[in-house]
Every structure is written in structure tokens, then in C-alpha cells.
Length: 119
Image (cartoon, rainbow, N blue to C red; front, side, top):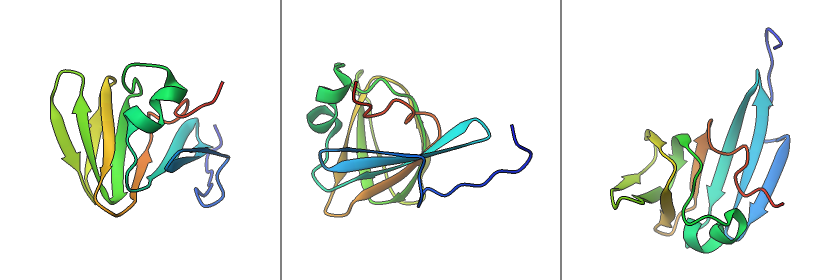
């Protein structure tokens, strides 16, 4: 690891696009930071399930919501909604969707390395 390293999500190492969204990633110090943007109407089970080929999202997320609102429903039925300024952890086994007419912008440091990766 370099003692000091800087990158910008405005010039990401990699960008992955998918219906109604994109993920931009940059890795520094062995940690991959991702900025996900989900447009209004985005829903994991509709737009990413065909890519992931799993029943629900199996990525763990440690996230910070920059803007917009996102609703999450766990496989066990538990539900939670995130909004601007919220931070949280979401375990594998969930669906999620954008709420309202504003894009959801999320910074995630644990769940985007393989997110929306086309094989």
C-alpha cells in the first residue's frame, strides 16, 4: 500500500452501467469505493436481478446516502428506508428501490466490487 494515495470518483477506475443506473469505482489503499446512482423507478429485482442471477441482492453494503431515498426489504421481510446523510449496513439477501422522483446517489465501501458485473 502506498503511504498516501488519491483518486477521484469523478474519474473512476471503472464504470458499470445497467438499466436506470450506474456504478463508478476507484480503489485506493486496497479499498474499493463505489458511487452508485439509481434513477427514479430503479429496483434491484427488476434491473439487476437478471445480471446477478440470484433471488435477491447478495452483496453486503456499508453505505452513505448522498441524495435521494432508497427503500430496502430484507428476505426476512424487515424493511428500512435510507435518505440523505444516512449511513448504514445492509446484509446480503435484500431487494432495494429508489423512492420518489430524485436519483439516489450512494457511496458504498463494501458491496460494489462485483456489483452489476457482466460475465
